[in-house]
Length: 523
Image 1 (tube, helix red, strand yellow):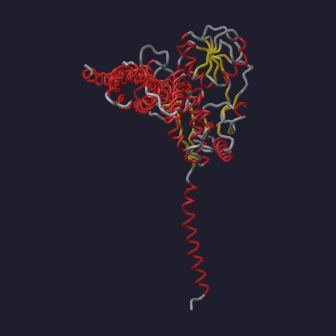
Image 2 (cartoon, rainbow, N blue to C red):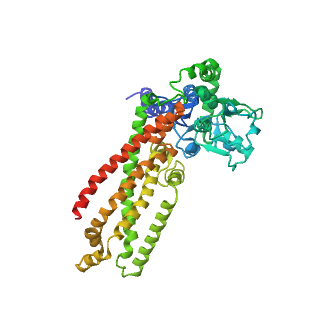
C-alpha cells in the first residue's frame, strides 16, 4: 500500500508544475514592455524633425525616450501631419501624441495630458526694420500662424477668428519663409521654434519681439482619457528624469546658449545661403525611395480599383440605350441603379479630393474599423490594423472612389460616341445587348478612351500627394520632412517634382505604346 503522505506530495508537485507551465508564458508576456505608437509632426525643429538617416529626432523625442525607459515602456514614433494628429489619437491610430502640444482647457475637454514637460511662450517674428513692439501692434497687419496652434489662438483673439489679415499655414517654418519673402508682416509662434529658425537663418533679417501679455504655456504628452494607468506611468517616468538630472541634460543640449550657438554654426546650410545645395538630400535617399514605392502602390491600386468601378458605373450610365426590361420590377431596379450611379458621380466629381480623403479616413474608416465599435473589425486587432495600414487603406479607398467617378464618365462618353447604327446592326444579326457591347461597341469605344484614361492615370499619380495629410509617408510627406529639417524648400520640392515628372512620363510612354496597336487595328 502506497503511503498517503508521499502521494499527496506527488499530487502537490504535479499541481505546482502544471500551474508553472500554465502561468509561465502569461507572466513572461506581462513582462514584455508595452510598445506605444507616438504621433509627432516631424517638421517642428528643434522639438521634432527627421534627420538624414530617416530617424525622428528632437527635444520631444529625447524626452519621450527617457520617460519610456524609466516607465518600462517601448515607443515607436510615426510622422503625423499636425492637421490630423489629434483625430489619429482619438481613433486609436496613435497611443500618444508628443509634438509640442500646449495644454489648453479646450484640448483637456477631449483628451488627457501628462504633467507638463516644457514651459513655452509665444514670440513675434518680424523683419529688422519693423516698428512692431508688442502684440497689439499687429492689428491691421498681415500675420502668419500655424493652423490650430497656440499662436493661432492668440492672434485670433486679437484680430478675430475670421479676420482676413490672418494667414494660416500647415507649419511654422512655412509661415516664416513667407515672412522672409515679404508676404507677411509678422509671425506668431512658439519661442523654441522661432528662436531655432532665426538662429539657423541669420541672413533672413529677422528679429523677435516678446510681449508681457503672452502667458506661459505648458507642453504635455496627449493621450486618450481612458488611459489613466498609462498617464500615471508616464508621470512617474517624467518625475524620475527630472530627479536624476536627465531632463536638465536634454534641455541644455537643445536650449542652452552655447549649445544653440554650436547648433547654428554647425548647420550644413542655412535657408538664406545662395544657390541650390543638393547635399542636404544626400542622406534622405531611403526616405524618398520609401515615398516613391508608396506612391506607386497607391497609384496602381487606385487605377485598378477605379477602372473596375468606373467600367461598372459607365455601363449602368449608358444602359439608357439598352432595350427596356419587360417586367416592371426590373425597370424600377434599373432606374434606381441609374439614380444612385448619377448621384455617386456628381458627388465625387463635385467635391475636392482632399475633402474626400479626410472623410474616408476620419469618418468612414472609423465606422468600419474601430477598437470600440467597428462594423468590420474591432478590439485590439482593429487598433493594430489602423496603426499599421489605416492611412494606406484610406488613401487607396479615397483615390479609387474618386477615380471610379471620373472613369465612369470616360466610359459613358466613349460608348455614346459610337453611332447608334452600330448597336442596331448588332441587334439585327441576332446579338443580345451584352453581346453587342462586348463584341461591337466596347472595342471601338476603347480606342477613343485611351487618351482620357491615360490622363486620369497621370492625375492619380499627382493626386496621391494629397494623402500626406493623413500621415501616409509618400513622396510629398518626404519632401515636407526634409524642408522642415533644414527650412529649405527648393531642393526637396524640386527633387520630388522631378520624380513625379518621371513617373508621369513613363506612364504616358507606356500608354502610347498601348494606343498605337489599337489605332492600327481600327483602320
